Image 1 (tube, rainbow, N blue to C red):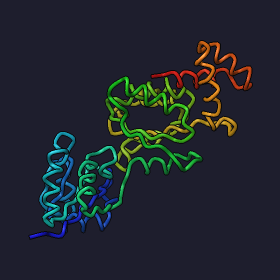
Image 2 (image 1 turned 135 degrees about the vertical axis):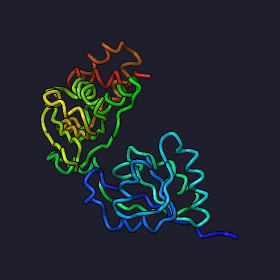
Image 3 (image 1 turned 90 degrees about the horizontal axis):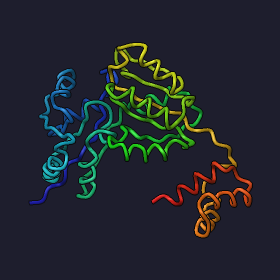
Image 4 (image 1 turned 30 degrees about the horizontal axis):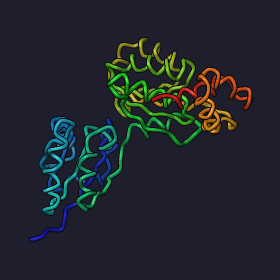
Length: 282
């Protein structure tokens, strides 16, 4: 006997202040057959607060693959399921992506229940002039991957959003300072929507001092928005001399190729040297 698949609801929950919960969030969590939560112990007080008695199961980074397969079976059998994270929107630096991907593959309806999101919340109060931005979330833990990513991001002409845990915030600010420069503007959001919320805009250099000036600032989750690099419109096409550089590098040393390219194009040496390094990197 075939069943009409249930619906997978991706439900945003408050990132701190419970008053940010939507009526649709509450009704959805009450109506589904099962709630898949990142941490059931963390989510239970939220459900208790709103009188939600729907059964819970765990869906976290350590069981996401196997648990998602089991949840897909329930959905295929007609049960509707909601997935929630500890705070904010699932699948955005939180578990949920694997389950959603499988649901799409199986033709199961997927429905977003929008709500709080820490990245969007901080971007809205950043005051940076451009509305577009890149969301990174947590930096890679492996140093090689982290360095490769930051090398790509440091010249970006758009704002970049990071998440960070309190025990790593000082080290991360120091690293960002090295790659983005001490004078780059940053907005720090600590404990957004919670009792001790702080939003502070400063430079990356001064951000280190701001965090160190108060021991409480080593507590609570952080969101960081780094302002994009201001680039002259004449230099937006970063690849315009790549063909010339490629041809010169085939016949000359990298140094000589750059010198000749400077003579031919009139471009700045540092710009052409960085392009040449990118073209010759493995």
